[in-house]
Length: 350
Image (cartoon, rainbow, N blue to C red; front, side, top):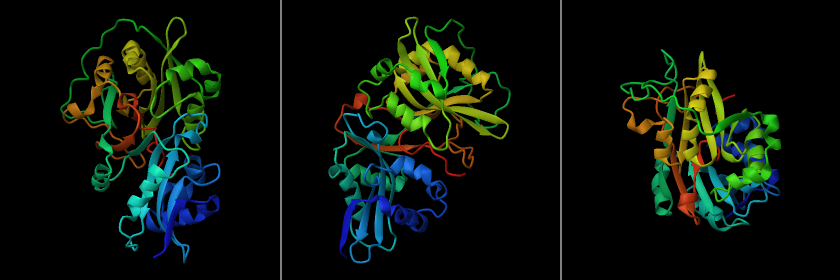
């Protein structure tokens, strides 16, 4: 069979959506909200989707969608790629076709990526990432629980009691301010981008505006942490998730030093209580877990019987591990990623 592997043309979008419908998932969110597909995969002159296409019949044989972070800020010095839908048709028997699509992303893009990252992939794919030399594992999962509640509808405490102890009452050393979505643009650009310095994947104020403020479906919340001199120390993004008569808060991205969570831990608890939320949680790679423990976050993996759900659309009251795999030419100590990276924090249902 004669076929070509290349980036998809903009005018091939309907063919790709048909492929997703027929060979991936017939009710996929992209088919219901094409604006979400555009937000993640529309490039300047092409789609951010690698396709394998039969030269004779023009049928698409395989796709590998990806999300380049320079789409959200074209001033980035480095390219970071988050992998998305990866599918070879079941009726296509071409050895190594799926492997060739990921190799195309590694070697044939206009800018060679400093980071290629996959989140939430099926465990069946793990051996392939291992053979390709990717660093693999599962995201850490930490939670700050509202211990003023008598009953919990979302979390399940099981045998865990380590969040029921009295918290210390000393004052916080830093200040936390909620930033309205409309006021994000007024943040000091130099101060904010200094907070982002050295991060892999690269981030910036412009990135935050494009990735989170301009999300076509979700509404995010923003907190800025600063000192007495109004120097920016930490910035995090979270989303409030409502389930029946209860809710939780989920941090989806963090910029700045996680050591500063300890210095606002009482304000974090106030945020949870003010929202009448059961907890504030965070999936992450790269944050110092000792610093999170000092801020009263607990490690879900080290708390027997504790259930902190991940799936809310539809709601599933069980623990879910999020697998990661990444390949990078940068220093691993600078790499950090979260639930908000790539396409992990997107709706599955409308």
